Image 1 (cartoon, rainbow, N blue to C red):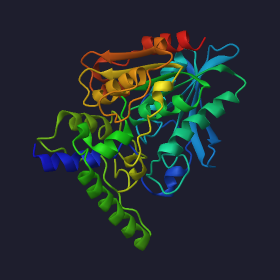
Image 2 (image 1 turned 180 degrees about the vertical axis):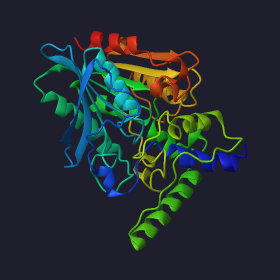
Image 3 (image 1 turned 90 degrees about the vertical axis):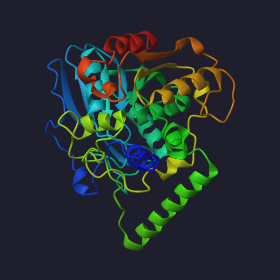
Image 4 (image 1 turned 30 degrees about the vertical axis):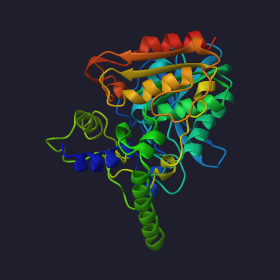
Length: 364
């Protein structure tokens, strides 16, 4: 593949990850079951709403185990980056509810059925706040043991989950599954290929031009979702995204990744920050899961090393080693690709038993 084509393709793809169209009808809450997976007979489901500290109304799907007696441990789930809850996060939440947890899969701000304007926008601070607001919601429930709350972040929300765990000690256990560090990829490009002042300046000029166009027209420009039609020479990870987002396996009408993507500067704030600075100070339990063959594997491995040792490739800063290293784990799933950990792929790659034992062990 030609380098220029790969650069353009990667820019469109990794600033993507399943947003929704700008049409405000996307924010109309649907009570119908519209997930890409069937509802388990072992759990009950209800639509819920709650607000974050910015006053944005978030919409989520609450999954409750039918066999629950008394208070239970709880888990908030979000991802992939900007994704709608009708996909991966809902699947993770439902499976964990089958195992006895009260679970909440939610749409983050500016996404899906949740509020916030403009649509198709991401924010390091607001998205971190979204996770903490989900913890707030679970804390107020009478059926939740408030001392046993965890979170799961998938893809770009894996990085956001780590950032949240670093700031909120109410979270007793965190799973980052097939994670992206969205600040790193937006600032440095894929595999740090654009990690230079010149490349970042060129990106800033492009962002500035798009912002000027938006303020003059009053309209944002969609950046494009997963490339369609799929080029014959597309790399394997692009084919993986296509197979998930553009087929019945993971397509959803509210997903921009399946449709027209983020707007052109929707992820600009991530490009100018490195928001995992304090993860080396996380005292609570953390499990980082990645596929052996995932193109994104370096995000998880580097983040785990930095969390444990205070230094790693891709991190310009050096800090102290983790004060509580014994409850941190890195799990590499043999043969799995990035999207295999979205829904299990063709070989049920998601290690459900490991997730179950991790949360039960660390949220006693």
